[in-house]
Length: 585
Ligand code: ARG
Image (tube, rainbow, N blue to C red):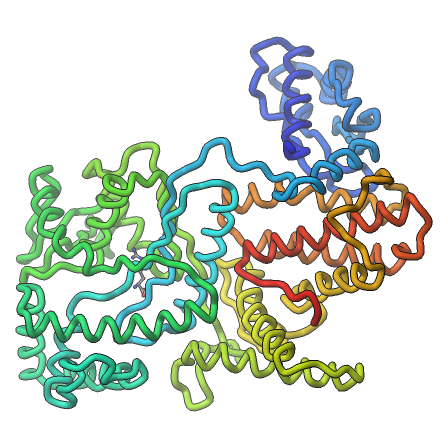
């Protein structure tokens, strides 16, 4: 199925050419959803924009377009309103046919893209030896959802975990552990990540306070970079220990990702410096090798340098990202590279990309996108912390969500006087708890900060995961009650849309592909959430006023199909957010 709007666009483009000549081929007809449902479903605003060019008044232009417009299969006769808006109302017969197509397609009528792109989503990317924090949680959830949408649309997606697994932090950590807990550096699994974080904090404190410690740490970094076997072994153990802990979180969240951390690019860093020098981009500034940036200046108005190699010979975060870009465009052949990090890193990426483009490492057709997100705040609006002021461990946060979901469930079961097995309860609480956390994050415009509230995210009402899961379970309840086989529906009866609420629901269902295209372009999963929320609301209104199982045929079958399509859309939509559904809850 073609998106409705795409079909209409084609019709308008033809009408424009027929009315005003071939030089109007490819003119954007400025077709948008109607500003007010009482005007219809869509409106075309092109007449106003062509007024100058054609030297005619917009109403005249609109009339000429309508005269040449052939949308009889899709719409009621178009009407012209106000300054020259062309209003369109979709015909029930057209909607019925579209729904039928959607019903018989396992992809719900959404065709894969005609232009699949090799895409890298660089997300999650926590740092070894430090615990994942809520910022990484956001990156993980948002990045996973973006990857899922792009995969579903047929893009070839590489999910990359750009782990912070290299660099100066290992020098101080290994130095400290050698003294405080040497077994950790020689024996696998001697350290849990919790302890590792504590050791990291201690090491950092000593590093900040003690000159001699700093010097030993520095030598340890040199040893690591030189490939000293003992140091490498210690580094390896620390990384493995961290991976295990990250993996636990990924399993809880059902995240698939390929580890390709900073250390992967270590052998390529010298080449980056060498090649930048050959290109004449490198300038020595106070002993460091730098590229002076265009469009970035300091307080005095002088161009800002991006340091590629420090005066002590060490490399930094930017150097690694340069090596990574080059590897991704040349080896991975990526055409779109998406970086999901907090908004604070926006400048870092602008600078690195500028240098990479100037070096000729990013072909013209390759799109580099930063997907920034805001902070997670506590209910007091301050940085999200535990009561004692520590950063919140992800594991604890997810466990807490599940345990609260469990309490809510027990209360509801008791109120409804229902008996359920332990297995049912544990599974439902897991799904609801994890979904609630994910959905609360994804449903916000990612660029703003958001307030983390267990109560809000677990509420059965509002734009929450439980609300959506409930609609899905409700439709399954109808299926069970009527003993309906959704897959066999419709063989005997047509889809008939008569009630306003049926039409509204049908139109919303058919807007799914437009939303996915929008997410594909602007990488804003909250649009998908908003779409699913409105779908659930529209279904609930329909369900409240239009009897389904009690209706006479052909209404009964037709309404069951609407219910089935709603459930399937919710299920698919949630799966693209990384959220599972429950048949009962
Ligand atoms: N490890 C970094 C952090 O915790 C995020 C890495 C993002 N990806 C990248 N290619 N720089 O902030």
